[in-house]
Length: 431
Image (cartoon, rainbow, N blue to C red; front, side):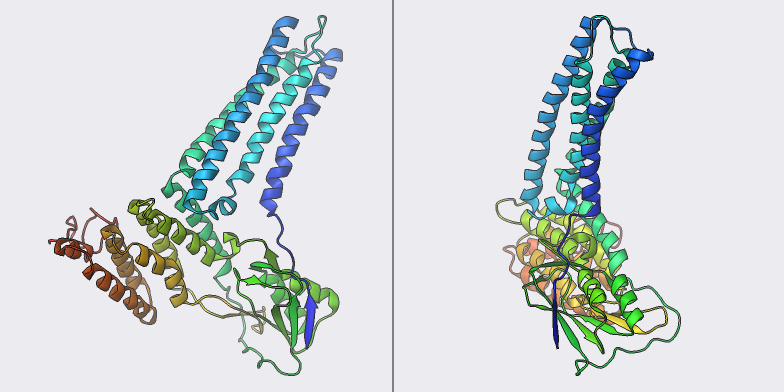
């Protein structure tokens, strides 16, 4: 039995809407305050710096003109940063959301300029709103502080290390939120047997990328109706209209709750790190292989990306992976979701770096150190999966053009080159 419903379309994240709303509020608030405060000062004179009408007009005009010019410079700087980030990976711009946060700065600058212009229109020969003019100067100081803070962030964003650290923070947050099943009291029941006559298949009526499966919402609905839901699509996968999304066993809930179930499978135009840890690994690998391309030839940035990949894999190494079954508070299986297993994550994180770094001694040494670190943290079964990459590194190292390079590449080094060896001495290929 098939039941076609539309999966929820991806929406702009709440934080993005908050940034846009705050930007509009700052710009509009500047105009409103610039109108109301001078009127209030006509009937209730307030304190502030002493200006004659000509000086007040000159000051407000200079503030408005300077802020408008400065806004253009800031926009140019952010455009250059966006281009630099896109050179690392075109997917990083949308993931890091820096432009959305910059909207608040634009709102503050626009609000300051509009405030100054509106106050300027209300300066008269017989009345200078002293507090209003003083506040314009205060707003300039605050805007300058915001710009300096933003520039410091821009400097961090244009470096490979800064980008991979930003991605890593988002990745770690996603790992802690998505790939860690909470413990529930009570005995746990198994998953109901497969696709029998009581199974209903819910399909997508539109295409998109699966950005998230809202597991808590699905488990709560399944517990309410005594059903089990199997999610047939993995987070990060693209689905066409008509693609099966969910199997519901043994009975279909009311139509309103079916809509809630399908909204829990959230579709959008592109993947997002927040609920898709595998995409975070994808981005880090993208930065590394871009750095290893002949056009860039920057293995040190690739080593920095590998540092963050190692950190993420260490967090993943001891967690349950693969297809997961989530239970309700009574321990009854309510939701089965598809997740990548350990071997798939290793391939995602390491295979392309190994391939494109085949001629780089730094990459050989850094990957060997990564494999050693993971082997100490993994279970024996997962540690065995690392042997494939050891063998690959051995074969690639043997193809290097000089025996000294071959010997150097065989030494694990967490810094790539120049780091301390296992005995505390600086690691070299000659011992």
